[in-house]
Amino acid sequence: MALSLQIYNTYTHKKELFQSLIPGFVGMYVCGPTVYGDTHLGHLRSAITFDIVYRYFLHKGYKVRYVKNITDVGHLTDELNETGEDKLQKKARLEQLEPMEIAQKYTYQYERIMEIMNVLPPSIAPRATGHIIEQIEFIQKIIDAGFAYIVNGSVYFDVVKYAQSGKYGILSGRKLEEMLAGAGEERRELKEQDEKRNPSDFALWKKAPADHIMKWNSPWGIGFPGWHIECSAMSSKYLGETFDIHGGGMDLIFPHHEAEIAQSHAGHNCTPARYWLHNNMLTINGQKMAKSLGNFITVDEFLTGKHLLLEKAYSPMTMRFFTLQAHYRSTLDFSNEALQAAEKGLERLMEGYLFFMSITPSESNNAISMQEIEDLQQKCYQAIEDDFNTPVLIAHLYSGLEFRTAITHQNKTINATSLSALQNIYKTFLIDILGIRLEEKINTAQTELIHQLIEEILKLRYEIRLQKNFAKSDEIRNRLLELGIEVKDTKEGSTWKWKQ
Image: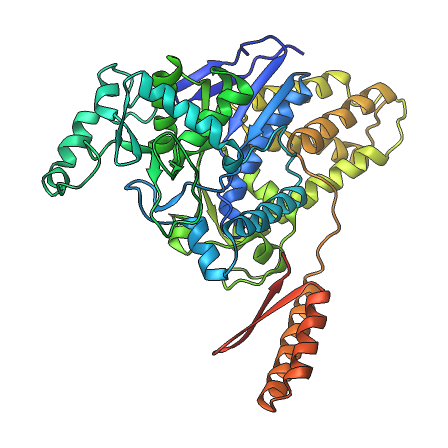
């Protein structure tokens, strides 16, 4: 079947027919995680969204080079104002580890969770620290083009000069004049030693303070790259100066993706991607789920039910299905009621899938027609090709369960050809494209019992510690660790979590 995929392009602010630069090939870059903490449910929205995009192109026979980066350097506590301690370095200091130990630990955790969630691995997962040379070379191109300036060992992108090209704000819709007017007070308060010419300028390279751990040599001195330059350097290395799709969360539109476009125009005189796709946020009570806001639920907490906001444990496919029930450009608000509804809905779909895969065909005058099945298939393709409209696709798959009702309650039959076509629809859309896989049903009672047993063991261990029998206390903690349970002792008592 020919591809007639319509994609909402944030760059042009409208739906467009997708046409790849090279026939039969798709180049896609998606901004991946910053690996300084536990993977939480908010991270899954983007991962699942672009997994669907990737899966659909593979289904249509495209050769896809899917690049998703790992940010293991360059993020400051406040990226917008480029202030504060680097997140990885701060986490390393708190956990008394090397920054790369932190990056490795949480990269492995992220990859493990992606596998659990049935998210396909990208073709390439480059790390920022492995591409310092490419970032330095890209920065030099921008300097040579006259769109960056060097101050005291740091390099800044000259947004005001770039804006004269008329291209600044094309993705986000922001106008530099309004931004500068709004920053008037800030500009008046700038100290003489402030390095930036304008508050809107952003760092391409920062001079490293003496106590900064992650730093490299460069033509401008010892320092570290800014946040935005890593994606420009790595996307152009693996996909070329211009490629098909750039994706990420809506929170990255400004400043990150706007800065990427500016850097590519300055360094390569072109826009990096032809189609820009952005998923909306997962929210809790209308507020974005994020580490910085402290309102996040880790994926491990979700799977074990060990969080105050969770009424019970949920399965990986429940979370995946819950995510896909909303269009990727719509907000998705978290609640136990919505999760439990998704759980029941998924169970119903999987029961229907297993029914279709298990029945035997038969012939009669009261048979389901091939036309009915072809109509269902066409509706499913129309939904997914309408900007990856997974909720409409799911609705069509639900409607297809009427065939099960017809067979079991209305004495309808289905011949071998029609049954094969129906089975193919559910395998293609439910399993291959939506990425739902069969899993054992969670026994909530057993999960709760496990949690209660762990808590009882910790109470007994606490009594042993009060008796100053620390050898026995350590023996229990080590045995729990062998079983995959990490125990942490604090002044308030002991806490536990599943081992990463």
